[in-house]
Image (cartoon, rainbow, N blue to C red; front, side):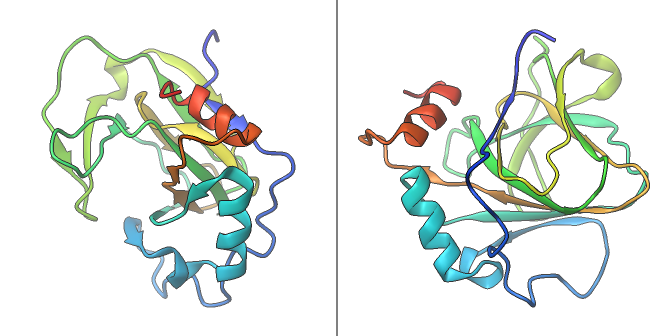
Amino acid sequence: MANQHWFRFKDLSVDTALKPDWKPKSLVPGIWRCVPEEKLNVDWIQYLSAKINANVNNIMLFYKPPHFNNTVAHVDLTITPGYIPRYYALNWLVDGADSEMRWYKTPLKEKAVELTPANTPYKSWPIEDVEQEDSCDIGGRLTLVRTDSPHAIFTTHQGRWCFSIRPVLLIKSNHDRGKKLLMFSNIY
């Protein structure tokens, strides 16, 4: 596969990221938009913000059940007017052994903007209409993922919780990780 749509941070730990009571009481598949301090330890938020030189001010939480196979690939869009593509997210999983995030070539056919149950905008295409380009087993490691290319999630025998941080990068940074993030997201 020609294009890599992810970058794994080997030296950024998520071991102390979660508050003990982070998990919703229900295992209903879904998507939730959260204030970071509701789910993540404040010390860890500060640690991550300093390491990647970004403001961590928005997280999404996703749950997919065992044997979930997406029927569509989607592109995340910003909430701001104009609905431009959201270039990247920092993801890691709790559970979800062997689940996979897959990326696809963007079709030429333009699609209408839709809204998730969390009221976040996206565009989607049927899986059978897109060609797979890359895949990654994200696991419990902080991984930068492209969200401006059509992508979809597939699980195997275990359901998965995905934390997806949507950082605001401090663009004038000389920090190496900030540069990597900016170059990866094509905005540097």
